[in-house]
Length: 509
Image (tube, rainbow, N blue to C red; front, top):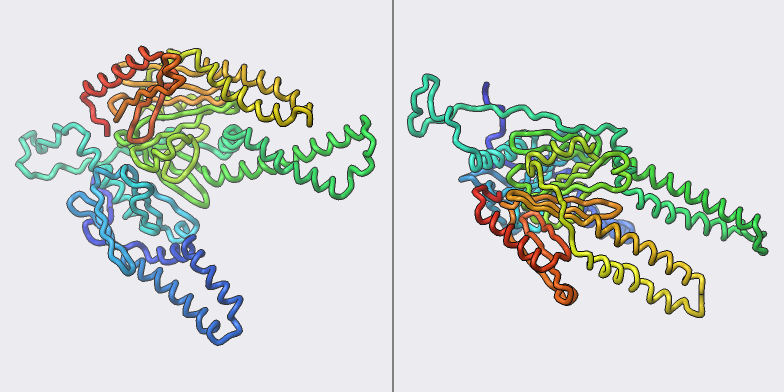
């Protein structure tokens, strides 16, 4: 079988001319047009205004064209090299083995002209190291394969079959290895539109309720401004029933409106979401108006995170996040939802979870150990008692009904901290570490110990008084921590993790 036809990236390349059009419709260009609009409105009748408007439009077009022409990229000596700049010239060199992610997106303009936007991430950049707004699919695939090929060459064991020829004789020195076509990608998960509706409902039900209240309040105010309640000067049962009915209707209407917005946004964002198993990890494709393709490579993923809201537990779904070794992944590690270059699978069926985790952390240890029960009293103090002090002082002698809310809040916090303490679990074995927490929304994170970069043991004033400590594992893709452990147990955990890191024969990336 012959190798797939790809663009020769050893030759200097430019983006597609469609990039000029994309740049014209970018946010920066729109911001540049704002002064021009003021010029049109304020000086269109003057001679200078008539001359300045076409000159300004021509200048913006010329700048976008020159910017496209002056941007070149190519691969040389296992480096992705870029030269760009309108007035000053900038040279960028990215070693291929330092590239963490090659993600692609397609907006409406890119879809019309069959080009893609490519984002290149490295571990040292605060954002995308390189963004090419319009390149062909062949160029994007060439970049991805160049990076994946480096990983396979770096981490894979030598193929004995490639060291001999067809007759079984040793290959001469310098002989090219025969081309081995990649195995076809297999589908692990595909979300239908019905699945995405369930995802939208289960991902943020509390947000829907708050949004309904936010929309219901203006409706209630609209009715009050028009005197709909003017006939209810006397407080009786009938007037209270009418007011409650109007508020209920407003909340229902607001909830339906918010629900429709959430469903539409989710379906457009994750349309035809598909997760593929590849030779190097996982590949995710999704989107309707903004199509994107993101890869999670086995060696680059630093941890696996998954969470379940109450609604997701009821629907047997789970949201999976795979932070990779890059600065953007580090900033987003605390979030388990979102798009961009992050690898997030929202609302996956629970039965697909082992297959999604297997390329990165297969069979993670079950979290069975607990944290100190003293943590509950700390949480109850700061989450229950302290927030009640200011309302109690301000309401005394002014509005006593607020004081009735305080016992309800304290009761809620009492049961919430009890549930949170029971939810905190962690576990460690010779290969993996797992931590789980969350009362209403459950969060679980798992790592392979060989990928740990640092172990931090911290004690604040409260910790020292109670002989406790917090242990944090630092990774290239974020951090994972265990709160409020007895000092002896925290030190044992730290030493065990460091021992496994130092004796591991595997590479961290």
